[in-house]
Amino acid sequence: MQCPKCKSIPLHPTKLEQGLSAMGCSACSGAIVSLLYYRDWVERTAPVAASCDHTSVEEANGIKDSKESSAEEINDSRSAMACPKCKKLMIKYKISGDINNRLDLCRSCDEAWLDGGEWELLKSLELNRKMPSVFTEEWQRKIRKQATEDLRDQRLLKSVSESELAEAKKIRTWLKDHPNKQEILFFINHE
Image (cartoon, rainbow, N blue to C red):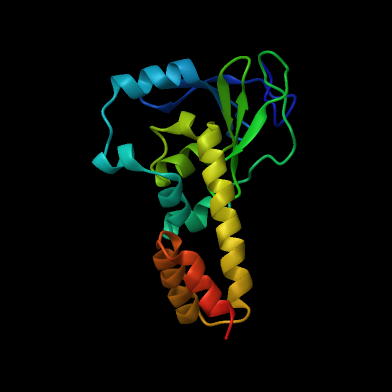
């Protein structure tokens, strides 16, 4: 098998973690991992921290520490790649709304390509034990929803301060499920 990113470099056996085998590229440090082997590894090994089981899209989007800063510098493959096994195109899935890296999945072979550094990125986001979640429509939908919300906030921040944005969000949250929402909105919109 050849590296789908480098095209001509042969992949060699490697380990992402103790007990988690993959086929890696010596040039770009990327690796293809069988999700079958990955799921077996998750079942066989205990999580390092209890919080690993509870990471959500929102939490992955909200991480603002030094690990994220270094994670943003990871060289993500931008172009479509062919699966090194079956040669079908792999589908790209965003990891979070705040980080541009995407995981590549071959639906035919059930194998994921991780660019060099993406395994460490998954670990820093506490997603290394939940990688298949990234490939779900629900995960991707939440990322798109969060991105839309972030754009809406940025648009409003052009006109108001951060404290005013926070106040507007409080009002919106209060109003969202209020039984007299329509009457209140009518009152606000008609001075």
